[in-house]
Image 1 (cartoon, one colour):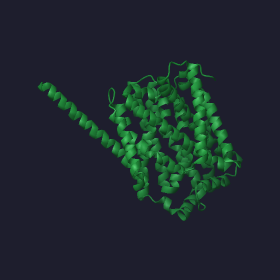
Image 2 (cartoon, helix red, strand yellow):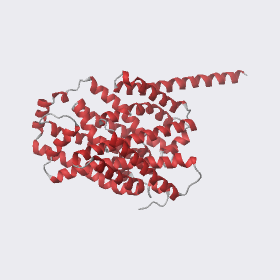
Image 3 (cartoon, one colour):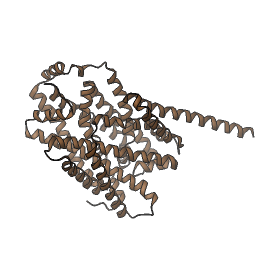
Image 4 (cartoon, helix red, strand yellow):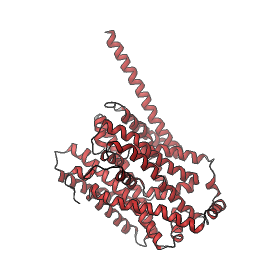
Length: 442
C-alpha cells in the first residue's frame, strides 16, 4: 500500500467519482463532534437545537458545491487549498491564511482527541493515556503512513458501520419503547426541550450558521477532496453529501432522547452511561462502539493527512531545495508522528466542554467567511487587505469576548470582517477613480 509518488500519497492513485466522493466526505464530516455535540446542543437548546445543528451542517456542506464548482473552473489542477491560495493571493496574504489553516486544523484534531478521550473513559476501565495512545497510534499509522489510498480503504468500512448504527439502533429503541412513551417522558422530565421561543436557541442557530459555513468553506480535507473529484460531478457530490449528513446528528440525538426520557442527567458522561445501560443487546452495543470510533478515527485521520500534505507541499517545499517524492513522503510520516504526539499530550492535560470547544474557534471561522467568498468569486489576484481583514476581526472579537456572550462575539467577528472588507474596497475604488481622473487630466 506504499505510495509511489507524493501526489499519489496526497490524492490517491485515481480520480474519484460521485460514490467514493460522498463516502470520503462523510468519513470526514461524520465526526466525534457530531456524535457528542449534537445531543449536547439538543440538551442545552432543546429538541429544536438538535434539529438546527443537523440542518446547519447539512446546508453548509451542500452550499460548498457552489464554491467547489467555481474553484475547479478557475483552477482545475491542484493538490491542496494552499496551491489555490498561492495562485489567488500575494505572498503576505497567502502566508496569513496558511498560518490560520494550520492553527484551525490543529484545533480540529484536538477536538477529535477530546471526543476519543470521552469515549475511552466511558468504555475502558484502564488509564486514559493507554486508550488514547492506541487511538493516536492507529490514526498516525493508517493516515500518516498509509496516505490517501489506505484512508479510502478504511473509509468504506467506517461509513458502513456508521450507517448501520444510525439506522438500526434508533429503530431498535423505538420499536422496543414506543414513540408516545418517549414523548410523554420528555414532557414530564424535560419540558424545556420542547420550547422553541428561546433567545438562546436563535442565537445558537445564527452563530452556528456562521461557524458552519466558515468551517466547511475553509476546511483542508474538503478542498483536498475537491481537487480529486471529476469536475462535472463536484456540485452533485457535495450537495448529496450535505443531505445525507443531516441523518447522522438527528439519529444520534434520537439515541440520547431514548436515554433521558426516563429521568434526569448530569452531563454527557451520564448520558453515555445511560445509553450503555439501555443497549442490552451485545450486537447493538458493539455496533455503537464501532460507529463511534469509526467516526472519530476517520475524521482524525483525514484531517491529519490533509494537514501534513499542506505543510509538506506549501510550507516546507518552498523553503527548501527540491526534494524527491520519497523524501516528501518520509517528511509527511515524520510530521504525522510529531503532530499526533502533540495532540496526544494536549488531550491528556486539557479537558474542556466539547460544545464550548467547538464554538471557541467560531470567531475564526466567522471572520473567514466573507474573505474566502471574496477570494473565490473575484477575478485575478486579490489584495492583501482581504486576509488582513480576517486577522483584525479575529483579534478584535477575542479582545471583546470577556465582555459579551459567546454568540455575540461570533456575530461581531463576522460583521467586523465584512465591514473592514467593504470599507477597504470602497477606499480602493475611490483611490483608483481619483488616479484615473488625474491621469486623464494630465
